[in-house]
Image 1 (tube, rainbow, N blue to C red):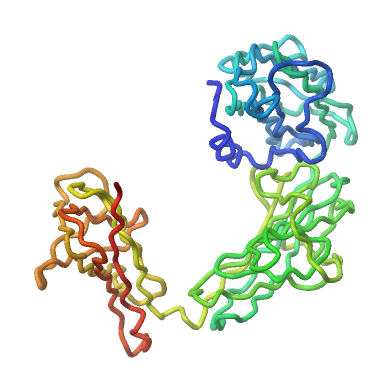
Image 2 (image 1 turned 45 degrees about the horizontal axis):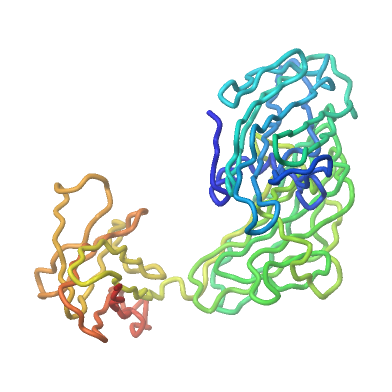
Length: 462
Protein backbone atom coordinates (compact mmCIF):
# COMPACT_ATOMS: atom_id res chain seq x y z
CA UNK A 1 0.00 0.00 0.00
CA UNK A 2 1.34 3.44 -0.94
CA UNK A 3 1.93 5.62 2.07
CA UNK A 4 0.97 9.28 1.67
CA UNK A 5 1.92 11.01 4.86
CA UNK A 6 2.09 14.46 6.35
CA UNK A 7 5.62 15.82 6.20
CA UNK A 8 6.08 15.52 9.97
CA UNK A 9 4.92 11.91 9.95
CA UNK A 10 7.17 11.10 7.03
CA UNK A 11 10.17 11.80 9.22
CA UNK A 12 9.02 9.15 11.65
CA UNK A 13 8.50 6.60 8.90
CA UNK A 14 11.91 7.27 7.39
CA UNK A 15 13.55 6.73 10.78
CA UNK A 16 12.60 3.07 10.48
CA UNK A 17 14.68 2.83 7.31
CA UNK A 18 17.42 5.29 8.16
CA UNK A 19 20.12 3.19 6.55
CA UNK A 20 18.49 3.85 3.17
CA UNK A 21 18.62 7.65 3.51
CA UNK A 22 20.72 9.94 1.33
CA UNK A 23 22.35 13.29 1.93
CA UNK A 24 20.01 15.95 0.62
CA UNK A 25 22.81 18.44 1.20
CA UNK A 26 24.86 16.77 -1.52
CA UNK A 27 22.30 17.63 -4.13
CA UNK A 28 20.18 14.49 -4.24
CA UNK A 29 17.12 16.32 -2.94
CA UNK A 30 16.93 19.21 -5.40
CA UNK A 31 14.66 19.06 -8.46
CA UNK A 32 16.46 19.52 -11.76
CA UNK A 33 15.55 22.77 -13.57
CA UNK A 34 13.99 20.89 -16.48
CA UNK A 35 10.48 22.24 -16.25
CA UNK A 36 8.36 25.03 -14.87
CA UNK A 37 5.33 24.15 -12.81
CA UNK A 38 3.11 25.45 -10.06
CA UNK A 39 4.40 23.09 -7.41
CA UNK A 40 7.69 21.57 -6.27
CA UNK A 41 8.41 17.93 -5.50
CA UNK A 42 11.48 17.39 -3.34
CA UNK A 43 13.47 14.17 -3.14
CA UNK A 44 14.26 13.95 0.54
CA UNK A 45 16.19 10.70 0.33
CA UNK A 46 17.37 7.94 -1.99
CA UNK A 47 20.57 5.94 -2.00
CA UNK A 48 23.64 7.54 -3.59
CA UNK A 49 25.63 4.28 -3.56
CA UNK A 50 24.07 0.82 -3.80
CA UNK A 51 26.43 -1.86 -2.47
CA UNK A 52 25.30 -5.20 -3.90
CA UNK A 53 26.57 -8.04 -1.65
CA UNK A 54 28.31 -10.85 -3.48
CA UNK A 55 26.59 -14.22 -3.80
CA UNK A 56 28.55 -16.92 -1.98
CA UNK A 57 27.76 -20.63 -1.47
CA UNK A 58 27.37 -20.45 2.34
CA UNK A 59 25.30 -17.28 2.37
CA UNK A 60 23.82 -17.82 -1.12
CA UNK A 61 21.95 -14.57 -1.87
CA UNK A 62 22.66 -12.28 1.08
CA UNK A 63 20.40 -9.45 2.18
CA UNK A 64 20.75 -6.47 -0.18
CA UNK A 65 19.98 -2.84 0.70
CA UNK A 66 16.46 -1.54 0.23
CA UNK A 67 16.10 1.26 -2.33
CA UNK A 68 13.66 3.38 -0.34
CA UNK A 69 12.41 6.67 -1.81
CA UNK A 70 11.12 9.65 0.16
CA UNK A 71 9.31 12.45 -1.70
CA UNK A 72 7.72 15.62 -0.32
CA UNK A 73 5.39 18.14 -1.99
CA UNK A 74 6.26 21.80 -1.40
CA UNK A 75 4.93 25.21 -2.37
CA UNK A 76 6.58 26.79 -5.41
CA UNK A 77 6.24 30.19 -3.70
CA UNK A 78 5.34 30.67 -0.03
CA UNK A 79 1.65 31.36 0.37
CA UNK A 80 0.98 31.46 -3.39
CA UNK A 81 -0.12 28.05 -4.57
CA UNK A 82 -1.84 25.28 -2.62
CA UNK A 83 -2.32 22.83 -5.46
CA UNK A 84 -1.11 19.24 -5.13
CA UNK A 85 1.67 17.79 -7.24
CA UNK A 86 -0.37 16.02 -9.86
CA UNK A 87 0.07 12.67 -11.58
CA UNK A 88 3.43 11.78 -10.04
CA UNK A 89 5.27 9.00 -11.84
CA UNK A 90 8.63 7.50 -10.89
CA UNK A 91 10.65 5.44 -13.36
CA UNK A 92 13.79 3.42 -12.71
CA UNK A 93 16.36 2.29 -15.26
CA UNK A 94 17.96 -0.67 -13.52
CA UNK A 95 19.92 -2.02 -16.47
CA UNK A 96 23.09 -2.01 -14.35
CA UNK A 97 21.61 -4.96 -12.41
CA UNK A 98 21.55 -7.13 -15.54
CA UNK A 99 23.62 -10.28 -14.93
CA UNK A 100 24.28 -9.18 -11.35
CA UNK A 101 20.96 -9.21 -9.50
CA UNK A 102 17.39 -10.36 -9.81
CA UNK A 103 14.64 -7.77 -9.39
CA UNK A 104 11.64 -9.10 -7.50
CA UNK A 105 8.85 -8.04 -5.17
CA UNK A 106 7.78 -5.05 -7.27
CA UNK A 107 5.07 -3.36 -5.22
CA UNK A 108 1.82 -3.14 -7.13
CA UNK A 109 0.28 -1.23 -4.25
CA UNK A 110 2.56 1.66 -5.16
CA UNK A 111 1.38 1.51 -8.75
CA UNK A 112 4.66 -0.14 -9.73
CA UNK A 113 5.15 -2.48 -12.68
CA UNK A 114 8.31 -4.07 -14.09
CA UNK A 115 9.35 -4.61 -17.69
CA UNK A 116 12.75 -6.29 -17.85
CA UNK A 117 15.12 -4.06 -15.93
CA UNK A 118 12.79 -1.09 -15.92
CA UNK A 119 10.31 -0.31 -13.12
CA UNK A 120 7.61 2.36 -13.36
CA UNK A 121 5.48 3.54 -10.44
CA UNK A 122 2.31 5.64 -10.79
CA UNK A 123 1.84 7.44 -7.47
CA UNK A 124 -0.98 9.77 -8.48
CA UNK A 125 -1.38 13.15 -6.77
CA UNK A 126 0.59 14.19 -3.67
CA UNK A 127 -1.01 16.97 -1.63
CA UNK A 128 0.95 20.00 -0.53
CA UNK A 129 2.77 19.35 2.74
CA UNK A 130 2.43 15.60 2.35
CA UNK A 131 4.85 13.04 0.98
CA UNK A 132 5.33 9.54 -0.25
CA UNK A 133 7.71 7.07 1.38
CA UNK A 134 7.86 3.87 -0.63
CA UNK A 135 9.98 0.85 -1.48
CA UNK A 136 9.38 0.09 -5.17
CA UNK A 137 11.31 -3.19 -5.53
CA UNK A 138 13.76 -5.65 -3.98
CA UNK A 139 16.88 -7.16 -5.47
CA UNK A 140 18.66 -10.48 -4.92
CA UNK A 141 22.34 -10.96 -5.93
CA UNK A 142 23.19 -13.54 -8.56
CA UNK A 143 26.29 -15.78 -8.46
CA UNK A 144 29.51 -15.22 -10.37
CA UNK A 145 29.60 -11.43 -10.29
CA UNK A 146 32.97 -9.67 -10.27
CA UNK A 147 33.50 -7.12 -7.50
CA UNK A 148 33.89 -3.43 -8.15
CA UNK A 149 32.02 -0.53 -9.81
CA UNK A 150 29.20 -1.83 -11.99
CA UNK A 151 27.51 1.20 -13.54
CA UNK A 152 24.65 3.32 -12.32
CA UNK A 153 20.95 3.12 -11.52
CA UNK A 154 18.83 5.99 -12.82
CA UNK A 155 15.61 7.38 -11.36
CA UNK A 156 13.36 10.00 -12.94
CA UNK A 157 10.40 11.61 -11.17
CA UNK A 158 7.88 13.38 -13.38
CA UNK A 159 4.55 15.07 -12.70
CA UNK A 160 2.02 17.25 -14.43
CA UNK A 161 2.88 20.50 -12.66
CA UNK A 162 6.31 20.28 -10.98
CA UNK A 163 9.89 20.22 -12.28
CA UNK A 164 11.37 16.84 -13.12
CA UNK A 165 13.76 15.22 -10.62
CA UNK A 166 16.64 13.06 -11.82
CA UNK A 167 18.79 11.01 -9.47
CA UNK A 168 21.67 8.61 -10.13
CA UNK A 169 22.84 5.88 -7.77
CA UNK A 170 26.26 4.30 -8.25
CA UNK A 171 26.19 0.49 -8.23
CA UNK A 172 29.12 -1.33 -6.63
CA UNK A 173 29.32 -5.12 -6.43
CA UNK A 174 30.63 -6.10 -3.01
CA UNK A 175 29.75 -4.68 0.35
CA UNK A 176 31.32 -3.07 3.37
CA UNK A 177 30.28 -4.53 6.72
CA UNK A 178 30.58 -1.83 9.34
CA UNK A 179 31.41 -2.91 12.89
CA UNK A 180 32.02 -1.19 16.21
CA UNK A 181 33.58 -1.85 19.58
CA UNK A 182 30.97 -3.07 22.07
CA UNK A 183 32.78 -3.93 25.30
CA UNK A 184 32.80 -0.49 26.91
CA UNK A 185 32.63 -0.85 30.70
CA UNK A 186 29.88 0.88 32.61
CA UNK A 187 31.00 3.93 34.57
CA UNK A 188 29.80 4.20 38.17
CA UNK A 189 30.22 6.87 40.82
CA UNK A 190 30.26 9.76 38.34
CA UNK A 191 29.86 13.07 40.14
CA UNK A 192 27.35 15.64 38.84
CA UNK A 193 29.40 17.78 36.48
CA UNK A 194 32.00 15.02 36.19
CA UNK A 195 33.46 13.94 32.86
CA UNK A 196 32.68 10.75 30.95
CA UNK A 197 35.17 9.85 28.22
CA UNK A 198 34.27 7.62 25.27
CA UNK A 199 36.73 6.57 22.56
CA UNK A 200 34.67 5.48 19.53
CA UNK A 201 36.15 2.58 17.57
CA UNK A 202 34.86 1.02 14.37
CA UNK A 203 35.91 -1.13 11.44
CA UNK A 204 34.97 -2.77 8.16
CA UNK A 205 34.75 -6.57 7.99
CA UNK A 206 33.27 -6.57 4.51
CA UNK A 207 34.90 -7.33 1.18
CA UNK A 208 34.71 -3.78 -0.18
CA UNK A 209 36.06 -0.43 0.99
CA UNK A 210 33.98 2.61 1.85
CA UNK A 211 35.45 5.15 -0.58
CA UNK A 212 33.47 8.32 0.14
CA UNK A 213 34.27 9.01 3.76
CA UNK A 214 32.98 7.99 7.16
CA UNK A 215 30.86 10.01 9.56
CA UNK A 216 30.62 9.58 13.30
CA UNK A 217 27.49 10.47 15.28
CA UNK A 218 27.86 10.86 19.05
CA UNK A 219 24.92 11.34 21.42
CA UNK A 220 24.72 11.97 25.15
CA UNK A 221 21.76 11.40 27.49
CA UNK A 222 21.76 13.01 30.94
CA UNK A 223 25.04 14.62 29.89
CA UNK A 224 26.36 17.26 27.48
CA UNK A 225 29.24 17.07 25.01
CA UNK A 226 32.27 19.35 25.11
CA UNK A 227 32.59 21.04 21.66
CA UNK A 228 36.31 20.42 21.28
CA UNK A 229 36.83 19.32 17.67
CA UNK A 230 36.65 21.57 14.64
CA UNK A 231 35.75 18.75 12.24
CA UNK A 232 32.66 18.04 14.35
CA UNK A 233 29.36 19.89 14.28
CA UNK A 234 27.23 20.18 17.41
CA UNK A 235 23.50 20.66 17.87
CA UNK A 236 24.21 23.53 20.30
CA UNK A 237 27.17 25.82 20.85
CA UNK A 238 26.94 25.00 24.57
CA UNK A 239 25.14 22.14 26.23
CA UNK A 240 25.29 19.99 23.09
CA UNK A 241 23.82 16.49 23.21
CA UNK A 242 24.65 15.52 19.61
CA UNK A 243 27.86 15.74 17.59
CA UNK A 244 28.46 14.85 13.94
CA UNK A 245 32.07 14.37 12.81
CA UNK A 246 33.19 13.80 9.22
CA UNK A 247 36.32 11.88 8.19
CA UNK A 248 36.86 12.28 4.41
CA UNK A 249 38.99 9.18 4.03
CA UNK A 250 38.39 5.61 2.82
CA UNK A 251 37.60 2.80 5.22
CA UNK A 252 39.32 -0.18 3.54
CA UNK A 253 38.02 -3.71 3.88
CA UNK A 254 39.65 -5.30 6.94
CA UNK A 255 40.62 -1.96 8.49
CA UNK A 256 39.62 -0.63 11.91
CA UNK A 257 40.18 2.71 13.62
CA UNK A 258 39.53 4.53 16.85
CA UNK A 259 39.61 8.24 17.57
CA UNK A 260 43.00 9.56 18.64
CA UNK A 261 41.47 11.24 21.69
CA UNK A 262 38.23 10.55 23.55
CA UNK A 263 34.96 12.34 23.03
CA UNK A 264 34.14 13.86 26.41
CA UNK A 265 30.74 14.45 27.98
CA UNK A 266 29.88 16.16 31.26
CA UNK A 267 27.21 14.59 33.49
CA UNK A 268 24.19 16.80 34.13
CA UNK A 269 23.79 18.24 37.60
CA UNK A 270 20.55 16.26 37.96
CA UNK A 271 21.78 13.07 36.29
CA UNK A 272 21.12 9.74 37.98
CA UNK A 273 22.13 7.53 35.06
CA UNK A 274 22.72 8.07 31.38
CA UNK A 275 24.81 7.06 28.42
CA UNK A 276 27.20 8.28 25.76
CA UNK A 277 26.92 6.39 22.49
CA UNK A 278 28.10 6.57 18.90
CA UNK A 279 27.22 5.29 15.47
CA UNK A 280 29.30 5.24 12.31
CA UNK A 281 27.87 5.89 8.84
CA UNK A 282 28.95 5.99 5.23
CA UNK A 283 28.99 9.77 4.70
CA UNK A 284 27.23 9.82 1.31
CA UNK A 285 24.29 7.79 2.61
CA UNK A 286 24.15 8.86 6.23
CA UNK A 287 20.76 9.22 7.88
CA UNK A 288 19.55 12.67 6.86
CA UNK A 289 17.26 12.84 9.89
CA UNK A 290 20.17 12.34 12.28
CA UNK A 291 22.97 14.35 10.69
CA UNK A 292 23.46 18.04 11.45
CA UNK A 293 23.37 20.79 8.82
CA UNK A 294 26.55 22.49 7.63
CA UNK A 295 25.44 25.63 9.49
CA UNK A 296 25.53 23.87 12.89
CA UNK A 297 28.21 25.14 15.33
CA UNK A 298 31.66 23.62 14.92
CA UNK A 299 34.09 22.81 17.68
CA UNK A 300 36.95 25.24 18.26
CA UNK A 301 39.88 22.92 18.90
CA UNK A 302 42.09 20.61 16.89
CA UNK A 303 40.37 18.12 14.57
CA UNK A 304 39.38 14.73 15.86
CA UNK A 305 41.56 12.17 14.08
CA UNK A 306 41.67 8.40 13.64
CA UNK A 307 44.38 5.86 14.32
CA UNK A 308 44.50 2.18 13.32
CA UNK A 309 43.53 -0.49 15.86
CA UNK A 310 42.80 -4.21 15.92
CA UNK A 311 39.11 -4.56 15.06
CA UNK A 312 38.89 -8.35 15.12
CA UNK A 313 36.59 -8.24 18.15
CA UNK A 314 34.24 -5.60 16.76
CA UNK A 315 30.70 -6.58 15.78
CA UNK A 316 28.03 -5.13 13.50
CA UNK A 317 24.39 -5.40 12.52
CA UNK A 318 22.78 -8.54 11.14
CA UNK A 319 20.72 -6.55 8.65
CA UNK A 320 21.95 -3.50 6.79
CA UNK A 321 25.60 -4.13 7.72
CA UNK A 322 26.85 -1.82 4.97
CA UNK A 323 24.95 1.16 6.38
CA UNK A 324 25.91 1.72 10.02
CA UNK A 325 27.17 0.25 13.28
CA UNK A 326 27.52 1.59 16.80
CA UNK A 327 28.29 1.18 20.47
CA UNK A 328 28.60 3.17 23.68
CA UNK A 329 28.78 3.17 27.44
CA UNK A 330 26.33 3.69 30.26
CA UNK A 331 27.08 5.60 33.44
CA UNK A 332 25.65 5.95 36.92
CA UNK A 333 26.11 9.07 38.98
CA UNK A 334 26.68 9.46 42.70
CA UNK A 335 23.05 10.67 42.81
CA UNK A 336 21.72 7.35 41.56
CA UNK A 337 19.95 6.62 44.85
CA UNK A 338 18.82 10.20 45.47
CA UNK A 339 15.06 9.99 44.92
CA UNK A 340 13.63 13.25 43.54
CA UNK A 341 9.89 13.65 43.03
CA UNK A 342 8.79 15.28 39.76
CA UNK A 343 6.02 17.85 39.98
CA UNK A 344 3.26 18.21 37.40
CA UNK A 345 0.21 20.28 36.46
CA UNK A 346 -3.42 19.21 36.19
CA UNK A 347 -4.80 20.90 33.07
CA UNK A 348 -8.45 21.28 32.19
CA UNK A 349 -11.67 23.28 32.41
CA UNK A 350 -13.95 23.54 35.42
CA UNK A 351 -16.34 20.57 35.36
CA UNK A 352 -14.01 18.51 33.16
CA UNK A 353 -12.92 14.95 33.89
CA UNK A 354 -9.38 14.36 32.72
CA UNK A 355 -6.64 11.73 32.91
CA UNK A 356 -3.21 12.91 34.08
CA UNK A 357 -0.01 10.89 33.76
CA UNK A 358 1.81 11.01 37.09
CA UNK A 359 5.57 11.25 36.38
CA UNK A 360 7.86 8.80 38.11
CA UNK A 361 10.64 10.14 40.34
CA UNK A 362 14.26 10.46 39.40
CA UNK A 363 16.70 8.07 41.00
CA UNK A 364 16.56 4.57 42.41
CA UNK A 365 15.14 3.60 45.76
CA UNK A 366 11.45 4.53 45.66
CA UNK A 367 10.53 1.01 44.60
CA UNK A 368 10.57 -2.13 46.74
CA UNK A 369 12.87 -5.12 46.17
CA UNK A 370 10.08 -6.81 44.20
CA UNK A 371 10.08 -3.89 41.75
CA UNK A 372 6.81 -2.25 42.81
CA UNK A 373 6.46 1.22 44.26
CA UNK A 374 3.92 3.87 45.23
CA UNK A 375 3.61 7.63 44.93
CA UNK A 376 1.19 9.64 47.03
CA UNK A 377 -0.52 12.65 45.51
CA UNK A 378 -2.29 15.22 47.70
CA UNK A 379 -4.79 16.88 45.38
CA UNK A 380 -5.08 20.66 45.05
CA UNK A 381 -8.22 22.30 46.44
CA UNK A 382 -11.09 22.13 43.97
CA UNK A 383 -9.90 18.89 42.36
CA UNK A 384 -11.46 15.51 43.15
CA UNK A 385 -10.06 12.04 42.50
CA UNK A 386 -12.18 9.58 40.51
CA UNK A 387 -11.56 5.95 41.42
CA UNK A 388 -11.04 3.72 38.36
CA UNK A 389 -11.18 0.04 39.40
CA UNK A 390 -8.99 -2.29 37.29
CA UNK A 391 -11.99 -4.21 36.02
CA UNK A 392 -13.61 -1.04 34.63
CA UNK A 393 -11.05 -0.37 31.91
CA UNK A 394 -9.06 -2.32 29.36
CA UNK A 395 -5.28 -2.28 29.16
CA UNK A 396 -2.45 -2.64 31.63
CA UNK A 397 -2.00 1.01 32.62
CA UNK A 398 -2.51 1.33 36.40
CA UNK A 399 -4.76 4.07 37.81
CA UNK A 400 -4.33 5.91 41.08
CA UNK A 401 -6.81 5.03 43.81
CA UNK A 402 -7.99 6.73 47.04
CA UNK A 403 -5.54 6.54 49.93
CA UNK A 404 -7.30 4.75 52.81
CA UNK A 405 -5.02 6.54 55.30
CA UNK A 406 -5.74 10.12 54.28
CA UNK A 407 -8.68 11.88 52.66
CA UNK A 408 -8.12 13.84 49.44
CA UNK A 409 -4.95 11.90 48.71
CA UNK A 410 -4.29 9.36 45.97
CA UNK A 411 -2.00 6.34 45.89
CA UNK A 412 -0.35 5.88 42.50
CA UNK A 413 1.26 2.47 41.86
CA UNK A 414 4.19 1.86 39.55
CA UNK A 415 6.47 1.72 37.81
CA UNK A 416 4.87 0.51 34.60
CA UNK A 417 6.44 1.39 31.23
CA UNK A 418 3.34 3.25 29.95
CA UNK A 419 3.16 5.29 33.17
CA UNK A 420 0.58 5.60 35.92
CA UNK A 421 -2.62 7.60 35.34
CA UNK A 422 -4.74 9.63 37.75
CA UNK A 423 -8.33 10.44 36.78
CA UNK A 424 -9.64 13.64 38.33
CA UNK A 425 -12.55 16.06 38.06
CA UNK A 426 -11.99 19.81 38.33
CA UNK A 427 -14.95 20.84 40.49
CA UNK A 428 -14.21 24.53 40.95
CA UNK A 429 -11.60 27.15 40.25
CA UNK A 430 -9.31 27.94 43.16
CA UNK A 431 -6.57 30.27 42.01
CA UNK A 432 -3.20 29.36 43.47
CA UNK A 433 -4.35 25.90 44.59
CA UNK A 434 -1.46 23.53 45.10
CA UNK A 435 -1.06 19.91 46.04
CA UNK A 436 2.00 17.73 46.21
CA UNK A 437 3.44 14.41 45.04
CA UNK A 438 5.64 12.43 47.42
CA UNK A 439 8.00 9.53 46.82
CA UNK A 440 9.32 7.62 49.83
CA UNK A 441 12.88 6.34 50.14
CA UNK A 442 15.13 4.93 52.85
CA UNK A 443 16.88 7.87 54.58
CA UNK A 444 19.87 5.64 55.31
CA UNK A 445 20.47 5.28 51.55
CA UNK A 446 18.98 8.59 50.46
CA UNK A 447 19.89 11.18 53.09
CA UNK A 448 18.59 14.07 50.93
CA UNK A 449 14.89 13.79 51.77
CA UNK A 450 14.12 17.44 50.94
CA UNK A 451 13.52 16.68 47.24
CA UNK A 452 11.23 13.70 47.81
CA UNK A 453 8.21 16.01 47.49
CA UNK A 454 7.30 18.23 44.53
CA UNK A 455 4.33 20.54 43.82
CA UNK A 456 1.14 19.68 41.95
CA UNK A 457 -0.57 22.70 40.40
CA UNK A 458 -3.73 23.36 38.38
CA UNK A 459 -3.74 25.05 34.97
CA UNK A 460 -7.27 26.15 34.12
CA UNK A 461 -8.19 26.14 30.45
CA UNK A 462 -10.88 28.47 29.19
